[in-house]
Amino acid sequence: MTPRFLHASLTDEALELAEPLSFSTVQPKRGRVPALQRHRGVPQLCLRLGLAPTNWEINFMPTTLEVLFSPAEFSTLKQRDLRDSTCVVFDILRATTTMMTALANGAEKIIPVTEISEAIALRKNNPSVLLAGERDGQRILAAQTGGIDFDLGNSPREFIPEKVRGKTIVMTTTNGTRALQACVGAKTILIGSFLNLKALARWLAKHEKPAQLIFVCAGTFEQTAFEDVLAAGVLGQELYKRFRYEISDSGQIAWQIAQRTGRNLLHATQSSRNARRLLRMPDLAEDVVVCFQRDTINFVAKMEEGVVKKA
Image (cartoon, rainbow, N blue to C red; front, side, top):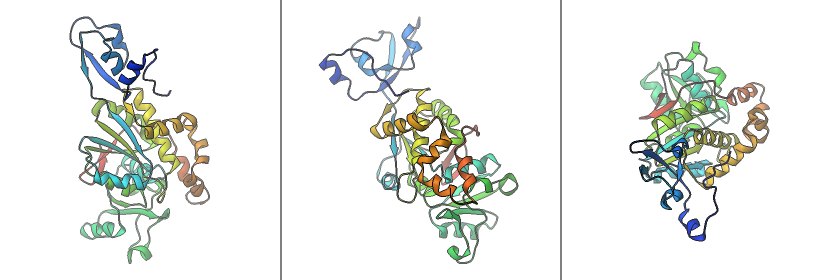
């Protein structure tokens, strides 16, 4: 289902009024509810042409969806005013999937940091924390830290209840934790994964209708990751079932990718360079199947003051 904003024959003047295309929520002020209320939204154009009932109270504050595809794009967030923005960060393979798994298995909180040195410093201040993370996909070892092996890598299969229940986990990864840190300053920062897409859509529709909704794709190294864009597109579709929003060109790109490949996620791994790379590693191949599961977790995780916890 591609967003359709208008189904009518319009004059040139009307078409000019239609830019930019968007939806507005409309609420009846009083009395009998018109049949038009059954729709989730009414195009602004129809309202501006006088086609909506006069006893409706109109709120022209649509949410705009934008998708950032790579580190080059999300690195610019620090120069933007994000106070009215909600960011959802996707690092499907594997950081955000692993964070959701850790919380689902009882971890108390996760502290994402950019550098290995930051993780080591936090460990020195609090020896009880677990260190987790990767460089080039592999667990961080003493040779990279100056003497300390990390307790965990970045595989969701490692974060079992026996290891993480009740624990604080300090985590650093090549892309995912960088993407989260880039969003600092946003009104809300959420963790995105295939594991909880429907929960995310429900939560956003209930709690958040921000002026700007930004899906941040962490990518792989400095490039776009297919799986992150696919997840952004699928969440866009799930969210559109719950409320209408204005969609940017970047959102349309993610939507179209989801439209073509989102129904069979495991088949979609063939289009992901990162998935193919992990599938060639015997000890990490099973991570791909875990990370592409749909809706096995029914809660949302939020980063506040540098800490990721259940919302």
